[in-house]
Length: 280
Image 1 (cartoon, helix red, strand yellow):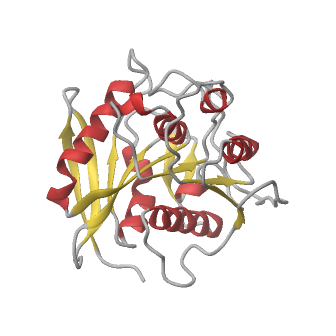
Image 2 (image 1 turned 90 degrees about the horizontal axis):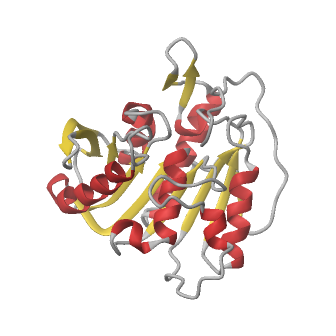
């Protein structure tokens, strides 16, 4: 069951002066779990994740969506770190309870979220209670650590941090980041003994966050296409599940789940994919 939501936009965070938006239930019985949701490679694209953030807030979450810039000299590392610090320091002002703190991201943001969970030093020892990665390419360097999650998991390090639950989502029609990247990460996490699930949905890179790529604008915009709405609802449900909230029956139930190994996939016809970037 979804609820009415409040939205606060254009809040400044950190010394960089970047902005973020907060989505929260308009009425809540008490403090709500917190989700920090990072967008992808495109600079200052927090608006792209507005449909997903609204859907997640409607399930009872306080969702913070910051701008950040992957073209910054440090690849956006400072922005990501500042946004996490702001979220933890200020979530209570928005009705959030950081005892449940989900770190989530889409595309390059997904890679950053997973990398931060694997390397506690990325956030000065602060760790999320769960991670959600949506359509990430986990085999290349993450902006927050400078290392690739897949390579980190394959290393021989002896000081592995305590595992946190990881939930992955990927579209089977994704032409930007192949779904095999999430399957690869899923297998690597399983091998390390981390609790992890992988959901595959019949949508593309933009559709999994309830958007479609608009070539003339060079960015993603909200989409009402059936595949995008269904995939976006599944993404919102995963955020809620990661935060310990069970969505109402029928919310986000569409898709296929992999608790281990690889299952079959299907493709969506006539979906608009984002033009591949140099590195995601």
